[in-house]
Length: 209
Image (cartoon, rainbow, N blue to C red):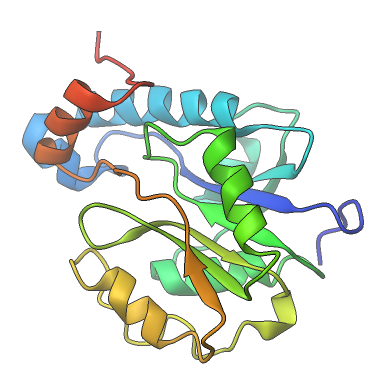
């Protein structure tokens, strides 16, 4: 278990080493693998700058595990843990199991508009609920949070149809409790359509050049 300040909320950002052809491949199919990796690198670093706050402990969950732990891309002052190479649900569970207590919120790194205000609202939701989810416009979610680690069932995320319009709804069905709520709806960037839409509307957009 990872040792962190007792009772301090934990924010985990899932990151992937920004190598062309290994990260954001769906986006790469639309705009080119080098461009997609370049965008992801700058987007992730921008997000990290935007969400670090004294109210919570910020941790990055890296993949590939060994390369990510040694990577010079990510800020050296942030604690790093491994997220593994399984599907998204299994990786989220692995991250949660890294900590002894909550509350913990886990987010992706491809959400241009996420800010400390969004994270703060999510942690406030957890003061009244066991779980919190941040929906995305495409039917997925950008944030998963739990108030207590021991309340997370092993059945959470079972049979979720990842990378589909059903991911959010499927996840809700696995929570085994009615004490869940949602926070802000944000846009993630998975493909060229998302990329173009975010380029027009996002406040924290990272241009390609």
